[in-house]
Length: 384
Ligand code: SF4
Image (tube, rainbow, N blue to C red; front, side, top):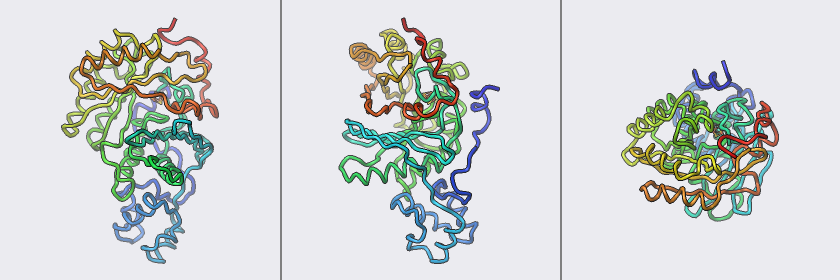
């Protein structure tokens, strides 16, 4: 069975315990913490107290949690910990984008990126080390899949970014939105991602509303259905093509879950959410590959009955990608066709180019688990 198949079939596992052999409270959502406190003979409400200390006040030393009894503080010290991952590199772009390369306890690296905009500050977090889905234009995809992140490793990105941004003491540097669009396919690390999302939305932790947390998928259809059944939140679909032939080449998971199935899953997801729900579609524009007027028209037909926010993303080039960024003219032409058809369309600016802010670029410089990069020396699909 291939790496991708084994990821797609069956439940993702918690492959690696995070850090210390003691239980890491950073990775427990409210239900998990309540169960933990009950298991040590304490009342459930300790969970919300401890969540506040850890996530809202950034306190990781149990002895400073002064609304807990001395006995409980000592007990927590002996049985549990609050352990974060380490910052290996911390880069700030001219445009304010801040990117962290983060070192995990097993020596692997992941990335998190903060993108400030006028009205909001978005943190993009990773869900896996590498990715099995091998999208042909993606720097993370070339590294291959290594392992799932634990809930603690996912939430640690939010914890660290909140603290480091607060330390800047500058306006407009607050996390208002989290998108799970960093390294990895979130829905192939389902349970840990859902727990992390619950912590992000918990009023005793980060308190983000359901409209401000987005999980992205390349189109793992059964997991989209499962997600819609258990949680109300935003979904983004990495689309990048509106016909199966092109999408098979750009996003290989399309061979398993082709567009017809993917669109049906999007409709089911919306039906399960509240009435104001819509799907965000991500579309990376690649020069001469998927940026022609006929591609835009195909998109309009494909998405005609799905409430859509279309994000057009100019390709952020990386070494030996084999793709080129679309011209400004091609981007405007594409965007205008969608606008004229009544589709809500946003052209995303390329951010943090001077700090390798495209997903996986920094970590890719450190490790290339599968040596997939050799294939990227060749021109890619559809390019002359
Ligand atoms: S685009 Fe997303 S799903 Fe595709 S290889 Fe990259 S990280 Fe994985």
